[in-house]
Image (tube, rainbow, N blue to C red):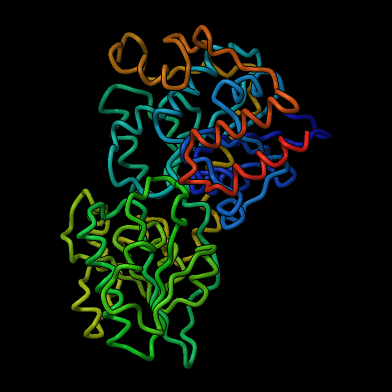
Length: 437
């Protein structure tokens, strides 16, 4: 437990912009106000760019890009009290085994969870997260499902802790005279096919033409070439460039912080984005599209019973769904004041675990070489860890390079992650700097 004169030291490891947002905001909500937060961005295809980090708008006392091995070394050497793993399930599992292999005498309290609601891979994702001290559920609905999964395989379910999405907030919706703005919140990978994405874009543009006095915005998560939580193979920006007839004057593509976009939204439309929950928390009229079916592959099945499912034909005709209040309450977005206390239980659990850090049991994930001998080794190997969680031979963390070596390394790594993501702008300054040395 930190002394009264030493602030709590918190580390957040994230592998994308949206998971950094969830992890950092979660850490702020469940830790002390004066806690020191260090952010670690896991090096990979979805490592956020500077633009994406600025758009997320969540800061840390320090922020660095690391490999999994470098993160484990930092935890071993720098003495953190609380660690939030905001990662995909396989990466969480690898870090849990890596942390277990460190055998720290005073290990940190380990927290993980999901960046949004769980549309797919419920059992797989949860079992990969098992072993953390706290597995946060973003709603009562998810908490019930999480416990059922753990208990169903005979695993300890006591880590499951009900909380809420940490980025909910903003002023309650008020209709402004003279303002009529529809926002479509796009998802990088839902739907997946060109035909389906083109259909949604075409209907959105047609809606703008049908209602010339209405501002219609397509809210995008990333620019072409940037990666986020999911890979976007068919960016709407490129599809819009090829749309016959061009775009009407009242239609625009926008980026930016979702909360700021919601500040001027009168109707939020989506297929399955977490933005729907942000809008519902603020009581902004919200529609979940059913045009492509209500299917698990789309994630809109999560909204069964919500009263929000509707088609573009209905929207064009002026339909506005009314959300089911009981459904809202189970999703943690009911506007009844409970959100202010939504993280009380998590804070209490963190404080309790910090108070008995010297007696915390070893990290014990459900997946071991006994329970999953054909699955676990491959997951760990992807992060250069052996089956016992120790670094694989040849995967030792390199010393921090300097001078030309650092420039070459950064250029090579940038190219390996793809000039498509970063563009030549990232490589060209490096080459110019190398020529100046």
